[in-house]
Length: 513
Image (cartoon, rainbow, N blue to C red; front, side, top):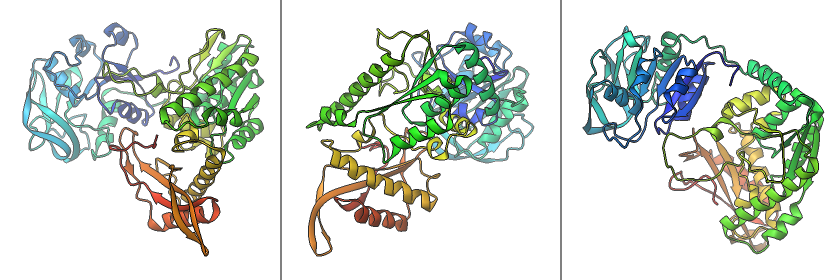
């Protein structure tokens, strides 16, 4: 991002909290970017970083197959903060000693600050921190002094003030560390001397100006899913080039109740652009007839969507640019090495060979999801869309277990609409990370009036999480669940039973398929 005057580098050694560290830095209006530990040191030198943070990681620093780095990085004159594995790595790089601990520290630990005058620990008292380590430092490198300890970790933090190198064995970025934010703030402002002038308003102005220069008088085509990322990208591009933008919206009939109409009305009424809607629900239902395997359903929905979308793009494309709603987490190259591939992100689209554009534009590629939402609010996108619930690429297709039919889609749309309405009425919508209804391929006996019924069961799924890597089922109050159940059974045809999924992740996943 060439508009950023000051940046913090988060050097990723495979820690699970790498994105969280960067987000914490950005919360202080300082731009942070994540790069893998394999990035060449010449690239780091060229970027003029104000500070560098080494992340944690699952490895032992004395195992030479573990992630290491060029020791020169500690001699660049750039302030460094090592966290957990990053702390041990600094120790190893400077000739200290790291050993496997007899007592593994994991969870909330009482820490004592030994050096109250430390710039890193300014105004931070003895407090609870979050530890997660098997190894520990048993001897500091020459020139370092201990600044904090715990009962089982005699060197919980250390520093070399003359060289601006700091290290902590705990994780300040997680909410369980009581003064973690204060510690990161001290590093960013007291040690790195950042100004904290990276604001969303300036991001919008700079991005719009850059887009205008890049696009000129050419056309832009954007695939608009109706999700947060593509919607904000569309609003930014509309602000930059107006009706030079064409948004292609494929409604495959697997969206939530009235969602297609809401997306169309929003963008045709608020923004200057050409909006193209492709309604193809019937074709999708035909393709899915008789299919029950979840992976086969995903493949059919993905393939058909790809074909419909690019067939329409062929009608609209004539040179110019193709835009995507790619955001920063989609672009980050992990420092974990050869990690298993879980899925290809839907925002990174492979273009058919026969379609040619001058270039691909990704106006949100430097932002995290929460930052994208803030941009959306500033651009005037309705709250209902900016704070839209996470929604899988295959839509309701992976929330209907078994064969997908028009009747099942209607049942699920109505039940899901009731849940979302009641969650909003109760004020729980901001505290829940995700909530939705699933339609299992299950029918149960019920009694409605004086009649026996044999109809659909629906399941409610609601979770709380910071990162979606792990999640806990939400403790929705019983009175709210009772209202949801009562309304679904009374208002949604073909449903006679409602259950609540109380499985956390792991062992379950957030979605059912």
